[in-house]
Amino acid sequence: MNTTITDVFFDLDHTLWDFDKNSEMAFDRIFKNRFPEIKIQDFIAKYAPINQECWKLYQNDKITHLELRYNRLKFSFDALNVEISDADINHIANDYIEFLTDNNHLFEGAIEVLEYLKPKYKLHIITNGFANVQDKKLNNAALSGYFDTITNSELAGVKKPNSIIFDYAINAAKASKANSVMIGDCLDADVNGALNAGLDAIFFNDKKVEAPEDIKQVNHLLELKKYL
Image 1 (cartoon, rainbow, N blue to C red):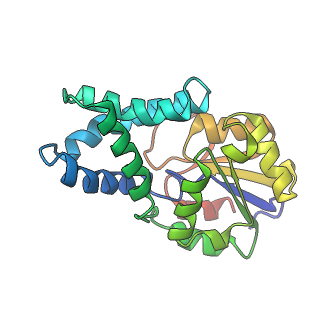
Image 2 (cartoon, rainbow, N blue to C red):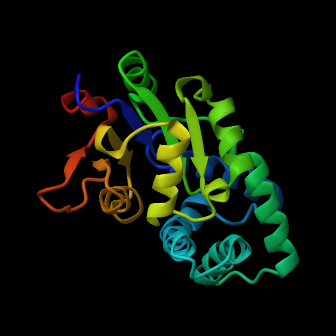
């Protein structure tokens, strides 16, 4: 146990909740009904990097929520050379949000590490996701009970890496920055965002991408026990 840390803040998507796996299952369900000729693996291969780039633009206020929902689908179908109407895109976007939270796959070790941390620290969520969707994910995956506070970008009015969302979360948690740590999968939004806001940070680097040597990192959630 780290005796200087009292409050542990987690990102949700791609850190505890396995967004890629749950997303693929949601699209698989949609395509079986609407586009049975498209192989889900082919779509995901285009969609995953496009979605990531769209989210980067969204979290840095370069595009709106509606543009995010539209662009990530339109650009993915364009990449597959599949013509699609705006009406179909809107149907898929709505079905996707509805179906996404029906799937509750978590990263390996998520529950075990939360069970380990819960008696030792106050646990919290800071997410750029949309409030109603993130609440469903937490409830359906039986995660809600582990966390004292949930901060999302709608509540804070800004998105990570903006320091205001970290200030908002710290105040909501009645915590101090000096005794807090942020854990997340995104170097820009989670790690650098937290460090710039005055919190410590741990990079959840499950994809083992290159990262600065001075950044604390883990490749598996259970490795958090080394730091906490």
